[in-house]
Image (cartoon, rainbow over all chains, first blue to last red; front, side):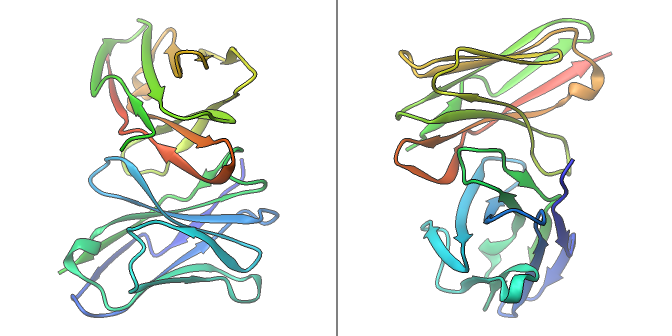
Length: 114
Length: 112
């Protein structure tokens, strides 16, 4: 089936540094999402992105977070600066028609902030 | 507060048995989705059931939706060890399809 690719799969980073998580969504999809998951628990919505803009973001999407998809390339989540509580697995997802339809997820980027 | 939640934290069955995971939600929805997440992997959709549907099947999987009680169930028949995973229900809600709201998940272990 359709694949969403996430790079890197794992990253360890010092607190205060910047990290960029990359997502290559399904090619004809129009909606992109980032979710945060700690220890296999609930998937927590961070942000969604459509038509080059953030459509909605949650309280977890702190000021240190930003997303973009320059020129149809990777959909990125940048955290600058990182904090210890940012340690989690970040999942990217994409869909063709919004959240009422199937979301395709990547395998996740495991971020450890030390 | 949770807009969607599964009703069991963890279940354990033996291979070949059937199991049902239940989910309740708190708003009017356009669709409810069941996802499975295996260890170290991203979630994968199993079934999407729309608000005007009462039942949907996908092989050994059967999902039901009861909009009057705002609940859904996912049944797996003839379970296999590879069904071991965390099962999530997730909903959008009427007037906002910008995101899915997820339950906490039910961990299912299928023993040989």
